[in-house]
Image (cartoon, rainbow, N blue to C red; front, side, top):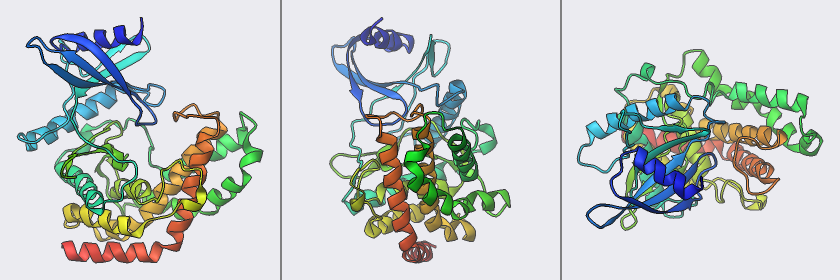
Length: 364
């Protein structure tokens, strides 16, 4: 069965009326395969939907992933009945997924919009901060105990380091000798990078319902106005720390380059972007955050940058079974980019902390 036949079957399984026409492969994303599918409706007009084939190597419990997503999206839709929101379609037996051999399919509404990998417009950055902050606030009254931990220890930085150490010792692809410089830096900052995990284990940072993958390209923007429409890519929604969401967003948005830029000399933290995102995020969240959460926001950007470098390098040493790659050294390039960004964040940490302090004071 070719991909057109598979997608037509998926549309039928999700009870979409009309006739399947064609698909376009969406290139954004490192994990799942995403297709924009066009359907000719009975009344004669075309309509687009998004269909995804979930990566079950990454998400070992895909049914739990969809259970989380269904609960969270419906909770948000109930709060904003007149706004555009992500909605996942159901099968005839009310499932939000279709299992077909090795394929695990889901389907949601397509929202005409724009996404960004690199952003120069500070208003867009500020709106992204508002979007992720509003996402957390919309779920502030949602019982996190109702959510599965779909990827255990996803942002447990200490365990990410432990996993890297085990991979280094095993050296399955005989690559460790070629990445000694990267390993030396990462293990030199291990204690600093694991501070959020330690504070959470000590009960000093509360668990909240968090997105856990707050790259700016996971926000849909109005093409004309630059306003945020919706937060997408909810596979990792589960209990987490506010710093996980803030830090990952900064890691992605405030870098002068894309996260896989091979020109390391161009990498660095854009302080204007850092400030704009911080303003938007704290506008929505400052009144509800604890002093310790606010005090560790700047640190969280460094933590999440180092954590991802650890993950990219771990995957590279294993032969890249986790992240999608475009060439053999892709994960190593990603690693080096994140390390360069982390080093620049260390240099700017005091400035970042002062920006957070000033923004939090202004919003309270």
